[in-house]
Amino acid sequence: MKTITIPESKIRETVKEYGTPFHIYDEQTIVDRLNNLMSSFSWVDFKEFFAIKANPNPHILKIMKENSCGVDAATITEIKLAEMVGFRGEDIMFTSNLTTIDAYQYAVDRGCIINIDWAADIYELFENEIIPDNICFRLNPGSIENEIMGDSKESKFGSTAEQIKDAVSFLAKNGVKSIGLHTMVVSNENNAQIFGEYTEMLFEFAREIIDEYKVEIDFINIGGGIGIPYQPEDFVDLKAIAGAVNEAYDKVLKSNGLQPKIYMESGRYITGESGYLVTEVIKEKETYKKYLGVDASMSDLMRPAMYRSYHHLTNIDAEARGEEESEVYDVIGSLCENNDKFAIDRLLPKSKLGDLIVIHDTGAHGHSMGFNYNGMLRNGEFLYTTDGKVKQIRRDETLEDYTTTVIGGY
Ligand SMILES: *Cc1c(COP(=O)(O)O)cnc(C)c1O
Image (cartoon, rainbow, N blue to C red; front, side):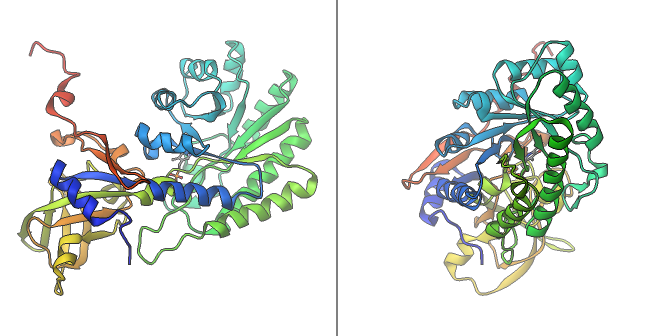
């Protein structure tokens, strides 16, 4: 059973005033997840840098700021979004890839932590006298597999251990005394053992670097990748995940007198469960299968179409009616793409035209992955605040917004 943490009356009021579809986020859930993350890692000097891409709405980023987190930005635009909310300097981790000199210059000028994807960039930075105060390297260990991330040897991210060692050797010769290390090799992962294994590998690598080059490792960023219970029967044991990391840390680092800070850049874990996409049944259709057509589409939530991922659906009107019959449906959007389906062969209470369907766990990689294909205008976002109010945090896009970049004269 998956519950909806926002009172149904608040959802219905929002539908009445603004219409469907929209995303609504529960602030309390976000605060709870942040607190749980921080308390699970309280055994170490810890900081979370929220991965902006998961939910870049400035109102959401502000919640991170109010809870003493930093942010992880992948692009200059994401750095600028962070700056709009008041993040500065080392509260911004810049983890981009294919990073241009101009992008480095922008981030270095602002004092961000520079997480370098391609280690050889460091030589070019020194040639151009762009010298970050805070340098981190992204390791691609080439040996980890995960359902969403795939095989790390096939991953375009990061640099090999040897390439990072060469770069660190160069930095040590140039008088740099302290660096950070990073890896991000899992996504939506619930298995504590996997976190234990890859962090142990990363910590071993940190120790080698310290031994060989006599540099200090100020922090180790173990990435994001903590899963959320998309399926009602899933369970994410964050204490066990943090415990596995703690064990690896004690074994490899602490026992050798090393105590670097631990950073994370979680996205999904922090905001994923806070979000709901509220949509209305606009068509019932039956061909070789039974379809429920809704007014949201994959342009509001791409994950089911892109990864065939499960998102739980609750028909709140069928529940309110006490509907006892059920049916197997494909729940579909109206894009001209056959993969525009929120659910395939899903058993739901018998549903009717006009029913409200709440799609769960849309707070990460939901609205942020939205797009305008087929002239789909992007829908609004709301925040259910900790003081029990619904606040609009983004209005619906209009045709005027959509066409504003078109040059006239056609
Ligand atoms: C996507 C991403 C994250 C966040 O991942 P989650 O699975 O949402 O926690 C963190 N760091 C980097 C570099 C990423 O690309």
